[in-house]
Image (tube, rainbow, N blue to C red):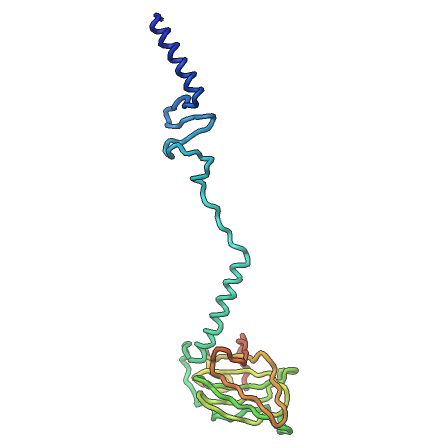
Length: 226
């Protein structure tokens, strides 16, 4: 090695030491990565540090376990009233032959009923559906009275004075006291007991409207045959 070579190598080592002191890169390998201060950088990302979190994936949002039950309850609160409305309007398939609906104001009472000792009254106003309004003994669940009212009618009937559980059966095509309105039988129970005092009565309006005070619950069972 001549003097020129020794001077060249000396200058090169001096430049490398000066570069290390100023913080420049040590070397670049053949895969395009740069090691600097003990850290690796990927050239395809433009040299941005992975420690900055710029390319870190977003945290996955995990729903609370109760949220699905809340959504289910919200859906049921909409679907159940909608199902009852479809039945009352007769929109579910019904291929059976209909029979005439009983005369408005006619009643069905148990065979062992002796007579009405003290009288109250019940006035019923129907909407777009025919209705059978039933009264039951809340203690025994025994049938006391069923009143038939055609759609868009108003009727007042005498009722024995007592406290009853009221149930409502509504629909379009009448199939008798066993099948009622077939697959379109809407069957509900009034949430609160109704007390009929002597020489007084109740008026119920079966039109569905916002703010109505006759709270009902859908019955999952079928009404009993009369």
